[in-house]
Image (cartoon, rainbow, N blue to C red; front, side, top):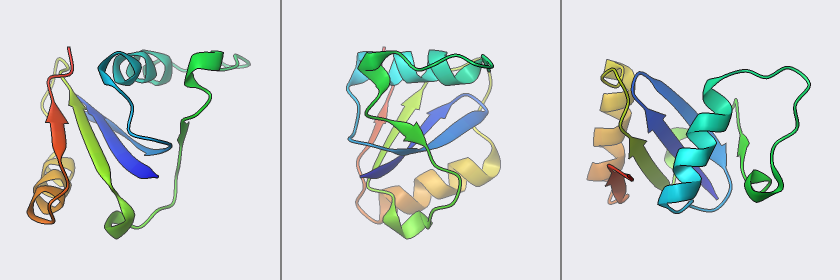
Length: 93
């Protein structure tokens, strides 16, 4: 399944099932800082960042609060997903 995970002004297009709140936070922490040569923890192995997808295929969205606002293009995409009936989970803390 394909979704978007938004954290402040950063976002990730994600392949995997819709994560629960604690997993969404763990993914944001794991992917927000690049660690060359590190391997993902086994708990996060079901998700991976995808670099080439069609927005029509997004089936879930989670917004994790960050220090900054989402970029305008991401906010527009979230509005489009909401209009399409995709449930957007916010504030998963």
